[in-house]
Length: 540
Image 1: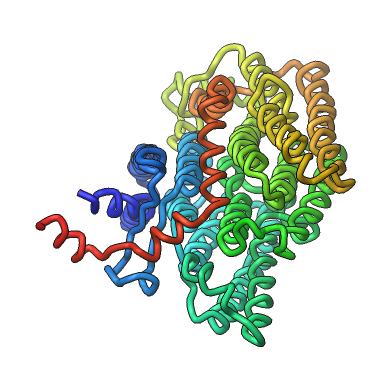
Image 2: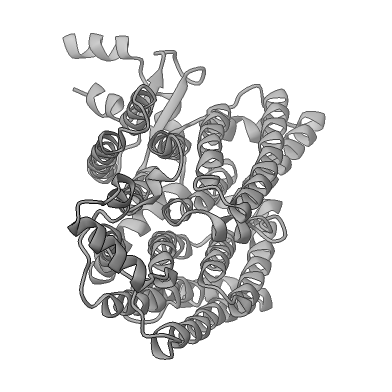
């Protein structure tokens, strides 16, 4: 039946919402029950996301629309699945499982309602990627941010609380701007449905057009704050540095929500005339400034946490600059880079905790002695759940090298392939024939694309020598399977991206072509049929 894919689209929102709500009814002391439910939920999300990715890829890349409340378009609250949203859903699910498993080592016990907040964050992320109208984008943004407020404060501590309160204040301001922008756009256009807006925008003139432009500008600022563009992203390094490791790992995709929305709306509203969009110039030069700021931060960072946070800014800057171009090849390379960099940064945030964790031998001896005499404390037993791995330094060193090469975008890893695709598309002979020459600003982008990798390599080599080659003591921190396996899993995914770069890039190219030509998206949304009509057609 045609209704099956439509009803399947709401699953990534309902699954974490229902599970997260049910967990509120259980006492927080039942940690293992909550952990099991959360893990099963994220695994279910991975399966659902994979199925939705298959649906978006087959049958010529169909766009699936789900009409909540069964209202006709464009009045319905709609969820829209296409290749781009399917990629983001899959990436969210792939990040969620390792981050959750890593948290089971100790972090899920560090505060109340961790699992509920984690699942509601996933619900907000999935909803933001699927929604087809601006108001519900705001709703899912708020769900995502409300959950992130609790998670960023998870674990307490003075530095974490200070950074968290800063984060909350900035994002509340961004939410206010978001709401004002949405109100202005609705006042000018009379609709918030994205597909309907793309049809109405060319018809709006006079004062309404000015109101529309102001609303879009305010909306863009809200998204750029979330994307971390300089100077609006000053909050990000401190917040991500002091967040708990699994929280920072899943936060790696939150900055990409702003990138996703900017890419979606700019191409949907302006199509092939995106170069006439004044926002595209802002994306480009703001992206360059963000890359420069991120490079300086990477080189100046004295801690790995700061380095990882500034790497998020470098990634955001690269994507902002890339999506300002009109070439499909550059957008495809940017999508590949988005996936690759997010996976590598997420793995690195978790690896940092293991690398910098100090284990005192006398504490381990006391713990073993207490266990032999039957005096082990329940809380202590919960903190050491897992299997200690011999050769921890070797495992951490290998993981650090793979992360370093991925973040520095060196061959043969996927980051190098992504940047190579972007550079190839920029310097494509056909594109050069149309442009006659490469502009000076584009050469700056090319230079910064290369320099950002060099800066990451310099910073990571310096940190690696300090940590692994010239340690002050010969002590090795204990590493648990439940902590190292999630990191290894994410790094394996980046290696799979490298090995399967050909098929993945073909999918990214088809995805980029679809969002550059949004006619099928618009048609699918505006001509979506209600469930009653579908049943009548099936009966006939």
